[in-house]
Length: 209
Image (cartoon, rainbow, N blue to C red; front, side):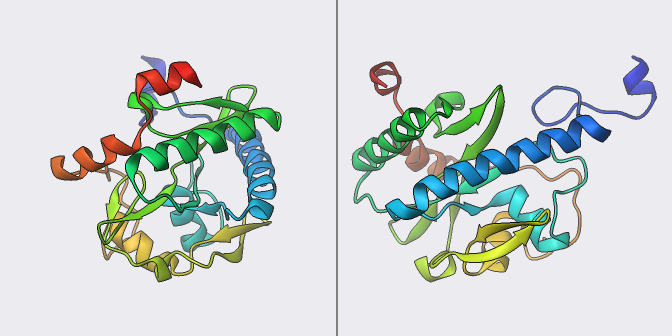
């Protein structure tokens, strides 16, 4: 009650947002995990680039959106069909686990989260299928908008960015993406969810993993 009375509201995950030094420490740890995954994947032909809210903060001011307490990244999958996409993601997850990272799958098997000590980076691989780019949501983007990934600066560190960040952000947040929208939420059409559900790990595959 005291937190609500002070104007503090639960975040999108249903928990109280971190503030001050605790938030800064969490964001520093996100970056360390991102760098570990990026540096492992890049020599193996997968560029881990910023996406969604993390890319939004990078494009607006080169840093996290104020109060942001998660980290979004992606790489491009080369799979030709949903089953091979899932298998490829599970193989990447296994390699990251063997590399010393913790791994878990988000709700409904959506791929995947890599972390350490309960700090998780969200990794939503991008897959070009049926003329669209599929990740956390579907986007009407050509591969040239995403690849090749290019270096950029975020929170004082070198990161990888999609080739055309503005195109991805406009697709994800609308043409006015540069204007903060505190109440913004992603809503996916049911038809998109049907395709996306074929990309996410099935319970049997999680048990096998």
